[in-house]
Image (cartoon, rainbow, N blue to C red; front, side, top):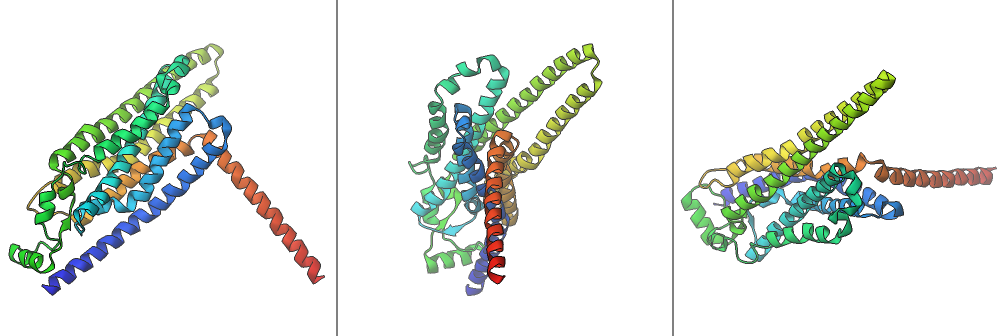
Length: 345
C-alpha cells in the first residue's frame, strides 16, 4: 500500500512539473503584454471611448485568464480537498475563462457591426449604452459558473470517493479506509449535463459566431478591394492595385495562421477532452489532458494580444514610453560616466 501511494505521489509531482513548465512561460508573457497594452489605453486620453473600453475589458479578462492559466489543467486531475475548496478551485477558473470568451465575442461583434454599418457606428446601442454589455459579459458568466455552488453539483460523488490511486477495487477500498481523504474531481463539481451545456451551449456557439463574423469581415474587405481596383483601372495604376492585393493576401494569411495556431488547439482540446474526461470506468490519458489543456487554453488567450499588437493605436504609446525610458536612463548613464571620469582625473 505504501508503495502504491509513493508511486501516486511521484506521478503527481511529474504532472505538476509538466503543468508549470508549459503554463508559466505562456502565463508570464500574457500578463506582461496585457499590462503594457492596458497601460497604453489608460494613459492615452484619445483612446478613452466605448470601443476601447470593450477592448480594455477584454484585456482585463485575458490578464485574469493568464493568472489562472497554471490552475486550469488541475481541474481535470484528482486532488485531496474538501468540497468547499473543490468548488472554489473549479468555479473560479471556469468563471474567468467564460468571462474572457464573452468579452472576446463582444469585441468581435462591436467591430463587425462597425464595419457592416460604418455610417451608423455612433448610433449603435453598443456605443450609446456601453455599460450594459460590459456588465453582461461579466455577470452572465459569473451566474452560470456559480450554478454548481447553488446546488447543481455531484456532492455525493465527492463524499463517496477517496483520493487514492485506482489500481484495483480492493486496494482502493483499503486506501480509502486508511486515509479517509475525499478526492476533489471535476465530476464532483460539474454534472455531465452542466459540462455539455457549457461546451455545446456556450463555447461552441461563441467560437462559431467569432469565426462567422471574421469570415464576413474578410468578405466585405474583399468586396471593397474590388471596388477600389475598378477605380484604379480607370487611371491604370497597376502598382497600387498590386500592393492592395498583397496587403489583402497578407491579411488573409495572418488570420488563417492565427486561427490554426490559436483556435485549432483549443477546439481539439474541447472535443478530444470531452471523450476521455466524461468516460467512466476507463483510464484516461492524464498527460494528454495536461498538454491539450495547457496548449489549448494558452493559445486562445493569445488572441487578444494579437489584436492589440496589430493596432498601432495601442503599440505607439508603448513604444513612446520605452523611448522615453531609454532616453532618460541613457542620459543618466552618460552623466554618471562623465562624473566618474571627472573624479578619476
